Image (tube, rainbow, N blue to C red; front, side, top):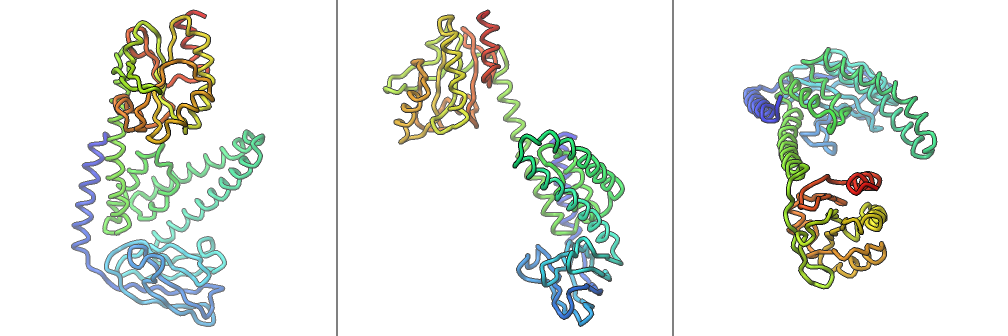
Length: 386
């Protein structure tokens, strides 16, 4: 499904769920139960859309056995949380007219609670228990690897089957509960950058099964907004890729050098040129500079030149010049308007992060982009034959 189709689907779902909510009638809910360890205390019913985490939607008292009874009304279906005095919470999926029984242990309300009368609440908590166990294992192993880098391979070997088992469980859970509001519990287990398409599918399922929920409507709106942003990013990436397709002639760069003299990139026609966008404050740029110096010293006599475009800002000219000297950037072509990423060259070359390099041939046409370290050396070796 293309971005445009997904946006149309999400727009339709937002419209559909908004209409459904306007037609929905509220109703009473009844929750009773027993929570061990919460005797003679209060339990709170929370909803992040009504009162947030600070103001309880409803508060009930437990007796000397930990029993409680809660009667109130809700205007719309949504996700609620039952919270004990010690901060433990259990998730509830509530619709007007629901009657539930909750039996749990205040020491670990998520891990040791049964919810009767709401299959969706039970499903949601079952999934969240599995996710908590997985995340605890992941966080623990990540910490071990961070403190002991030499154990990274062993940690990864141990963790990979754990991750595979969990994601198999997650995907099975989604497939078996496509019409359940409990799917909301799976959303935090997605890597949105890598699994955006599946994330959107789950949100679409939630919109159809629990679309009157303000929580689901908020998530649906978030997806529509992010989808638009990702479409714009994809369009920009495609435009940039076309701009730097090998054989494409680059735009000229006309800027002042360190002394204020205007120089042009086109003055270097006849040479193989590395256009290097960098800045004195950019640590990755500074780490890469020795590789560029090495390439320059080896291939300059063969016709290789470097044209450095600094994205330093106004007031930092002395730092720019000092960095040139400190890093031994001995080539004469250093230019900057001291405007940072707002400089015309950065806009012309769609530079949004540095270091960014473009290698061009003697006719000013693109050979490759972002060549660094060994890759730059290999390309120059191919061009010059040594």
